[in-house]
Length: 186
Image (cartoon, rainbow, N blue to C red; front, side, top):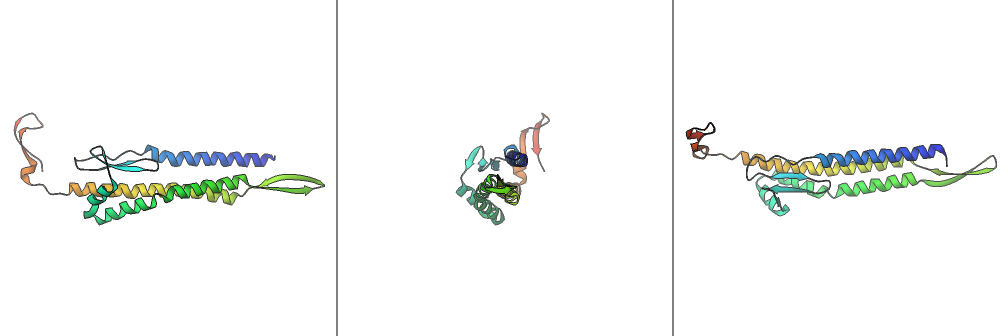
C-alpha cells in the first residue's frame, strides 16, 4: 500500500470524526428555554427528537397545534419544522454512504516497466460531497429545531401580551419589603 493512500485515509477519518463531534455537540449542549409564567411552554432539544413541555409535562403535538391556532405564523413554523425534521437524518445517512464509497474507492492496477502495481482510486470530490451532505443533514435538523423553538417563543410572547386589570395587579397583604398593606405592580 502506498504511503499517500494511508495518509489520505487517516486524514479523511480524522475529518469525519471532527465534523461528527462538532455537529452533535451543538445539539447536546443546547438548553431548554426559561419559563416566565405557569402557562408558558418550554422547548427541550435533543439530538433528533425534541419535546414541548408545560409545567414539566410533555405536550402532545395535536394539543400544541391547538394552542397555536390563534397564531397562524407560529403554527406554520411548527408544522414546517415537523415536516422537514425527517429529511435531516436521511440526508446525513446519504452523506455517510457517499463518504464510505469515496473512501473505499475502486481497485485498479497499472503496468510500469514490466511490473504490475495494484492501487486504489479514491474520489476526493465524492468524499467532499458526502461530508457536505452529512453537514447539510445536521443543518436541516437544527433548522427544524429553530422553527419549532420560534413557535414556542411566539406562544409564550402571546401569553405575556394579555392585558390585566388593575385589580389583578393589586394585592393586599405583606409587601416585598415586609410591610403590611396594598401592593401594586404597573
